[in-house]
Image 1: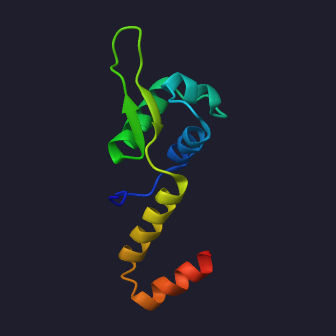
Image 2 (image 1 turned 180 degrees about the horizontal axis):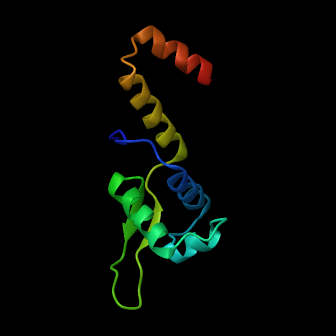
Length: 107
């Protein structure tokens, strides 16, 4: 699994929580309805497209007149967490003993 190039922002995290909870692929409209605030449709759409570009969401279908892309989680919560931890370890240039300590604290 490739590391995610950057941490997820608050909106991205909210969208991923919705995606992980869904047993079926979601449209932008589905996700927007589940968000707690009144974000613009285009904001949610752009954020979901970026998550798909990062490989966190998968996108299926073609956006033709009257149809919409459907999105689902491409990676699990655990995989995302593992990638974020690995990225942080790499950024901090941690040595093996630091990694062991960090994993022990997480467990």
